[in-house]
Image (cartoon, rainbow, N blue to C red; front, top):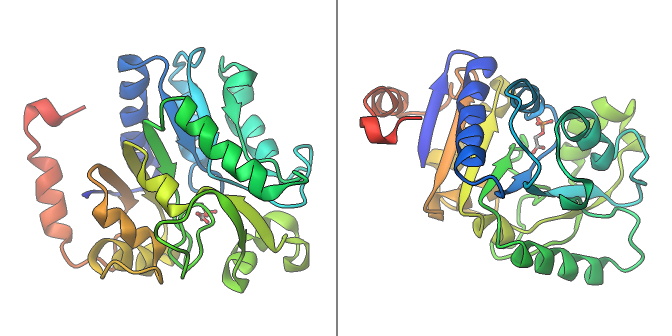
Length: 256
Ligand code: PGA
């Protein structure tokens, strides 16, 4: 894992945006895995400002709430079009987001996995992290080998996401999420976390044991993971000086 700690969410996001911009310039038909929530908002803003060419890019989103139509303001379809897709030249047919209204969830999930394979696999997956260590909506105790499927949100996640819905009661209980096994097949994972409320989950994920109790910890077994943090999210890490030294002394060929 490469741990990059920056003074602010803005500067940490800038590192992540440059990694994605570099990929899209090297591989204009890249396949991106995308995330929703507060964390990637700045990233999407910076990517829009970079005026990259998205014409040949294919995207797969991590998750969607079960029961929300794509037109629902809190659906992740709505989120992605509002915060990224409508501002870039992506082709609508290249956008893939789980269907929260599918009549046959297992069939839909199997098809989503096949679509990812047919697109050539995900080159780079953007991830946020829940305060309980979830990635996608893979809550604690999710199988580390899981594939795209239905999951039940924990009370903690429903509480965390109540701010988007107005009240906790309106937050759906179920979602469709890529599995941890699906995420582990992305060629690169780019995890972003900002703020003190993520510090514990990040410390456990990066420096704790690999455990389904903190699903993000499985990324320790992935060959290419970049973790972009602000100082608050990094505040419970032990090896911060080492991470800073590594980043400040990267060989020239590794720099962006
Ligand atoms: P957040 O959510 O970006 O809104 O904090 C992260 C997540 O739940 O993965």
